[in-house]
Length: 334
Image 1: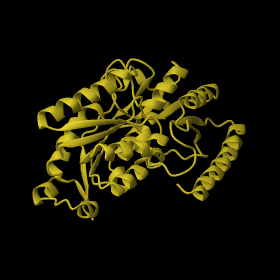
Image 2 (image 1 turned 90 degrees about the vertical axis):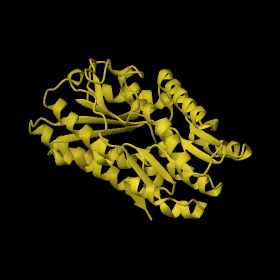
Image 3 (image 1 turned 60 degrees about the vertical axis):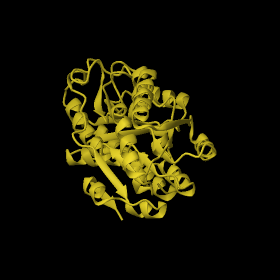
Image 4 (image 1 turned 90 degrees about the horizontal axis):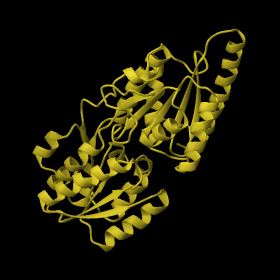
């Protein structure tokens, strides 16, 4: 997002705040929604599309910021301490519901309150991350949507093997603390088991922060990786643009967990449609504002996974996509 656009959003928020204040003085009930995101408050970030889809979903349900809802936005700047601080700020503001973007934000919100309802967008494994008791009966103050992060890492490796001729060594870019320990361990075990079955050697390359991404690619090229799989992670998701650029510079065919990586120039992606999950999250916000309890709202799972291919990138890398693989794609970017 350009700085000028971001400033206009801030000004719009100020106007909405004045409108809400006027309505409050007239005794009208205004619902207050806190939005908690782990990423930056300024600058380009792929997650903004997901957040905007939440607003679209709310508008479709009859909610308009500055009219019948107020929205307080808080950003963690990809610093765990800061994310915890702003989560507490939302609790102190006594918002009616907190919408948390990703598991990272949901965990910070849950640590800050056990009373205010939390609706999380695109959780990885909410059970293993101890956010809910079960998908069917969350049982606590957290519900929302899951993109089934751990279940798909093996499938992505399989797809990479189908698209890239004999990738004997595959690099895996991962964020060690993106989710809880059980979830991260599960993802690593899944991809290692798949690699062994397919006769591939994995190079696990960690990136704990955005500053580590460039160094991670240097490590991949040193080890002569033939392809790259990017693990799910809110931080890595926000860095898709830079990752796609570095992958292009190093001629690394790459598969992403979300289509935003392909939109940024990556080769392909396989996963849930995150903007769609975000719009569905708005339904739960509406239900909670009308009296429903998060404990009684099942965590929603995606019903479809998209395979998106960037043909231009494939041609640049010298990869021939067979008609059969093209036919299996849900969308092809030319």
